[in-house]
Length: 143
Picture (cartoon, rainbow, N blue to C red):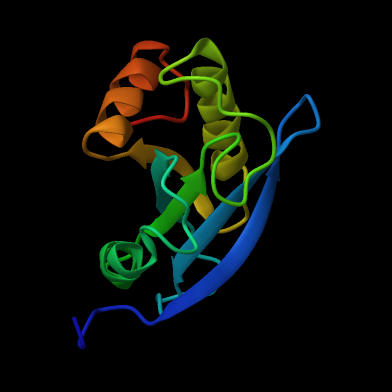
């Protein structure tokens, strides 16, 4: 992991504003050494409740850094009501979770560094919600 095609910049804390005013907390790893500063990259989203600043921080620092080092904007978002995100997490896999994910995907696709294409990944909770969100067919979600 010491040698990757791209250098990396980390945004430690980014708020993503939901339509209802709730803010979701994200950490973003971005590649910085492309052929052109205007080059936009696809985003990869991991959307889970396991607190980006403590519980998964070490694992995230390896996984997301790897993706960014290979040319993707890699984004880790705490679900509503978990970690640094606002709101209340009432249960697993609720419609609100999917609605928030749709807004996050749209937000990512509109970022100046993003090509407009977003992928989701995960295992367990993150894998299951990725499948639920994919079934909703948001336009920017490509994988």
